[in-house]
Image (cartoon, rainbow, N blue to C red):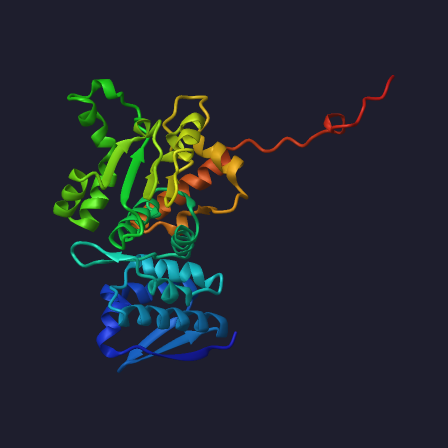
Length: 339
């Protein structure tokens, strides 16, 4: 195997960001692609096979582009660039980074970080109803909240409605102290947290008092028609088929809906069907409805979370019983021969 040398320009002031602390990012690239990276005076040489050195060079160029855009390069950026390199899409992370949704109250830019998230955000922009389905940590709820708040600020909608089914993971509402609102608030806390971070507590409280932002259990949606609103249904895997149908038939004119859920984290009673499962089967193929499936590759929390999600996915695949092949006698339209 011949060794090829590829040169990449990485400005000296960006090297510490692109290379990572103690060169951890470069070491990961070297180990994964079996290349050697040498840096000298703003020029980086990549040594390896022609294919591997090109991939490594493209990854370093993409990470440099991210750094030039003011981003702090994280282990997640490097892991995702490496994953994309095996699909020859390593340059896609720069395109993803250019899609800015809004800013948090502290000035942090909220943007998609993976191709799956980018498709999800684009679907929300284009479709009236979007289903975001995927494991924990893929940004389903947070990106939906960011899109809703941005639309609200731009006067595209008159109010934001956030809802969740009040189904508990092994606990019962009756055991909790306080009135009904106190009982359901813990289940809506993730929605409050995102609102505080993006809008700020003062703006959130003012809009809540005016009724322009509403956070409520799914049961409160019955009998209403929701016009000119951005509506987010979170944890949709915990809805019953009747609840999902009830929710979808509340949608009025000028509204946009995002439904998020994780098929692997259902808290419904054993044997109950999930409204999300049924909705995917019934509604797939309808215009103005998008279904976006996020995977472990789209997890943007700590890298260990991505490994945990992938480990569970692998385990669950092994636990599924193999499909039983249909015998000739089972095939429709075939009659048994008389003996």
